[in-house]
Image (cartoon, rainbow, N blue to C red; front, side, top):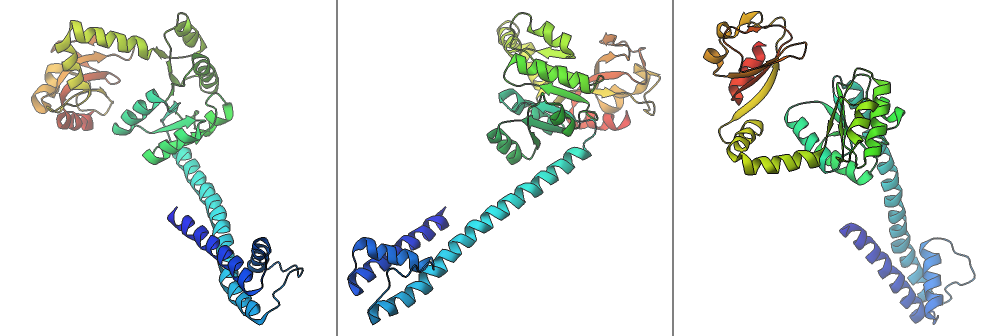
Length: 328
């Protein structure tokens, strides 16, 4: 900005100096002097008004060198900015397209409002690949600044979702501002990928959740309902909520609650919980086990079998869970 102001200040100074010079040396009026200065430094030279006196001609020579050089520099910078800006946008767009094309088992976040920002931040913190879709250019600039992969367009458009790699995605999160938009996004996404996990935002209005589920949403969340429940629980069960916050947000004690998928190669697979050594070797508590059929076992007993495909919900310190995660 300072450079732009400096350039235009110099241009204004040359115009003013040229005008005053011709007024003094050629006895022109202010407007004739300005006119003569402009056609001189722009090399137009109509010939209808020319310097007559020797001093005016000498003045014109210096004015041409100073003024024409500055004008050429200004036009050069404008052209350079336009070309470089266009090329930069094309190059950046291609880089972004390549990043999207490399994504596998990623999440598509539709909408970068207040909720979308928080979701993206948490996905980033947990090393989950994702791409953000939004039609607002200002929001996309913020997405770019944060280093997320972004895609401009309507999230309910087939081409936009296909460009975001919906065929290869693990899940889609529809959190745009209106229920109608989230409904259209859900319908489109379910049609493009029948096996996709779809999490949709609801305003909490009666009937919206049913419509979203009918459209193909896997889960429907109402931020207002969850916020109200959380505020009520903080009043009724404050200690419980403090504990949940501690485990979900990795507080000062470093506690973390995580879910771990047991693979076939895991050393603890097909073993009883007491034989697995999870508590002894990793100092981690198994809070619950979810079977492949969806059955949830809370506070599993020591003789509970750990099977391949189970999802264990565990509680412990961050480093300990990370070590256990490598074993499963």
